[in-house]
Image 1 (cartoon, rainbow, N blue to C red):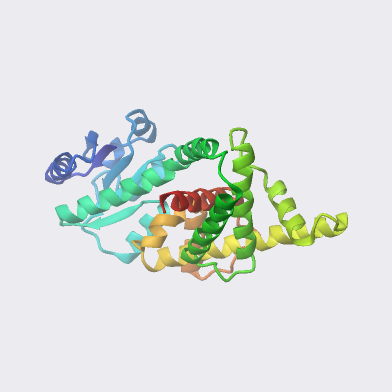
Image 2 (image 1 turned 90 degrees about the vertical axis):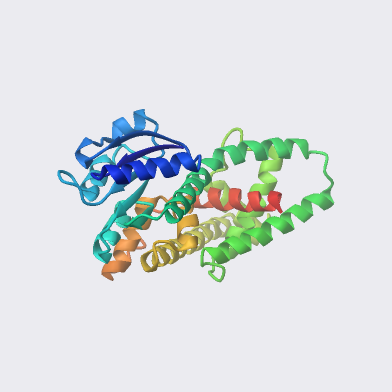
Length: 310
């Protein structure tokens, strides 16, 4: 991992660099004493994975700096400050930081937070690697018996149900649809792999409709059921978004929030929902643009990873 440190206190910068070096966490590829010296494109050129930044600095503070680099910098951000104001900390999280550490800094806490953020980063980057490895495994498994395939379907249902519980939606109407989607994707990948892409959402909803009504069902009934299943799934995913945003608003360091929020959703949407909940504004289900395909992909790959690990 590549790190960049921004703090007007040279001692803090030196301590953080030493922590990273002592624990072999990665390389500090740059540092600065003010946010005005930090640019998103420069961070990307240095291939910075994690930016550690102070809140209060003389020319441009941490919050202003984050706003400035947000359009281009896609790495993780850890804010370090002596300020304990809940309002400022909340604003920092809503801007997109991944963690907030209160000064004076403690080596054990700093290392624990950095490792947690590193793990989160690896989790987000793992989807493509998991997909490739699963394709390899499935190609090797072409000779498996039908009994073993049924056992895998049973397993992926179990892990899927566990994940839906973790996401706060195990009792929602669309949860059964999501479990059926996992089985569909497992069988689809065994037959076709994902070399030519993930199946479309329309194909998924057609499968759900045929599974529920049967192949002999009327075409109009099938189309109605496709639409109904889409609405059930969307509303269920929306409830998961609301649940995770609520967890994050209550406790930024909540383990489920940290593990799942940006993995299953675009974090800009999570921050928007957190803001709505914080301001107690009217829910905007119809205007919330949820990336349903991202959620379904994340659910499948995470359930499949757990199944293979188990």
